[in-house]
Image 1 (cartoon, rainbow, N blue to C red):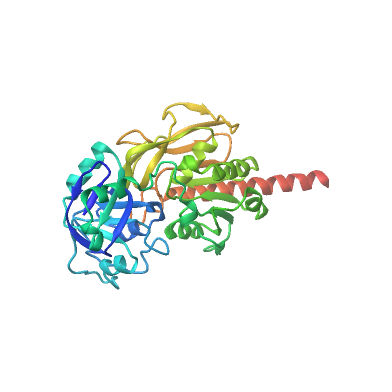
Image 2: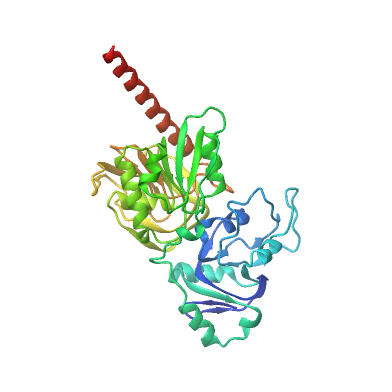
Length: 384
C-alpha cells in the first residue's frame, strides 16, 4: 500500500524489501538511468516514483553506481522487468533493492500518482507491505503524517563522507580543488580529475579555516539533499572562502548555497525538477541545454538584469533558467570568480549538453594560475 499525506491510497505489489518506509514522494522523469537515480545521494529522505513504465530492463552493475549505496527511502514503479538483459549487467535491480533494504511498490498507476503530485505538490508518504500492510487505514495515514517534512531538514551529515580522501589528477596537474561533499556523485569527482585537478574530497563538517589551510586552487560544492535554508554553516564557510579570493563552482545544492551566500533567499518548489530531460536556456549563448536535474528547492532571484549582492560580493546575474517554469538554473558573479548551476553537468546517465561547465571551471583556474605567475614575475623584476 502506498499512502500519501492527503489520504490518497494505492494498492500494488511488494517490490524489493518488505516492511514500512516513509519519505517525501517525488517523481523522476528519466527514461533511463534508474541505477544512477537510486544511488544519487540527493534523493535521501525521498520515495522516488519513476514515470517510465518499465524499470529494471538492463539490470545493475558496479560501474553505474553514483555513490556507495542506494539512498532513496522507497521506490515506486509501474512494471518491474521480469528479465534483466544487457551485456554490462551483473545482477538484477530486484536483488539490489532487497540487499539494500529498500521498500518498494509496483503494479500501480504511476501516471495517476504523478498527476496528483503535479497538482497537490510533493508530500509526505509511506509504503506499507508485509506485516505493516495489515495496519488500519487510519494508522497508516497517521504514520505518514508523523513523518519528517523536507522543509527545514538538513541531510548533509547523512550522505557526506566521514573521512577526507583524494583523487589524483588525470594527465597534467593544474592545481587542487577542495570538494565539500554534500552528497557528491562519483561521476562529478571523475570529471574534475579528468580536467587536471587533484580532487580533495572533504566531509561536510569541515571549517573554512581547514579548507583554506589546504591552499586549494578552487572550491567546489556538490549536489545534495535537504533544504538549503537549513545549511547556515555551509553558507558561512562559502562566504569566508570567497572573501579569501578562492574561485568557486557549485552544482545543484551548491547553486542554492551560492545564492544564499550572495544574500538571496531560497524557496521550496511545488514538485521540483527531477529527471534527465529538463530544458535550460544559457542566456550568454542562447543555447538550449537538455539537462539532468534533481532538486526541490530553488534560488529566489530575478532572471533578468544585473543585481547587487546583499553580502558584499559585487554584481551577480542569472546565467541560466528553466524553460518549463523560469526557475533560476545558474548564477554568475561578475566581480569574483564564482559561478554555479542548479542542474547536474556530470549528467549520469546523460545527456551531456552541460559537460562544458567542467571545462569552464578548469579555464578559470588556469587563467588564475597564469595571472599569479605573471604577478610573481613582475614582482621579481621590480626587486631586481
